[in-house]
Length: 355
Image (cartoon, rainbow, N blue to C red; front, top):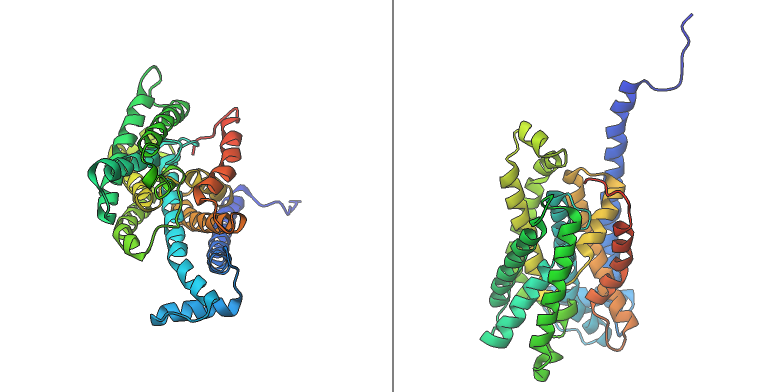
């Protein structure tokens, strides 16, 4: 007599796993979308002057109609709209950049801040301001792109020197050393120039307060192109996670994918740094948190990381305004405070899993 069992067969388990995974990923995406709405509402409502829901709606309505509201609360809301939009886009771009860097290097410590990319972009912009009279958003973007790409290449070369070639720890150490050196140069340029020190201090820690829609329109094309390239590379990045030999066997041009994805990641980071300064740890924290929820599939990891990054930076900016009232604490300080423990936890792992 054949006995029956409630335990599913291996084939049944394999068939059910993708459905469970897909359901979890969809839930994560929906929750992320709701979190964006909540973070935007909090960003508009809280700051040095809290406002109520009616004033938030009045401020948004006046902004859409192109009017200047008479109520001071609604006027405060209207002034927060540009920085909220910048925080959303900058956070999404930084998280996407970090996810790309982790994928192409298979390095859990990869992040635009840790690898020195955003500090290199900041140094280039500060140098342009100090020595070449740089003042336009286009100039900021151009210098930031050059600085970011030069720094990325330098860190990769330094991290590749020695036996064993490029390893996660060597890249992280090269990036940390480069970041420290470049940060010192930024300080050396700014400190003697007391007249502009207060105005440009956000180039040391990162802040979205100074950005506006005019400068945002300059970097949006870079963000859109970089984001589209990242999403188009998702399937190939999944193949890279299996190893270069397997990826080649699957028809993936490994070198080309790495270069294209790296260019997209560096450009995303540079564009954000051009208007907000070097904001660190967003690209480290968010992909790790998302990976724990959705798994390593880049087709889901990349877009959900972008959503998570937008939420994180918007909330960090809001929190900085609340705790620093009547002034503010820069968003880059808040993300560093949150991200440092995450970096310690990752670095203390005895075995780093491949991504």
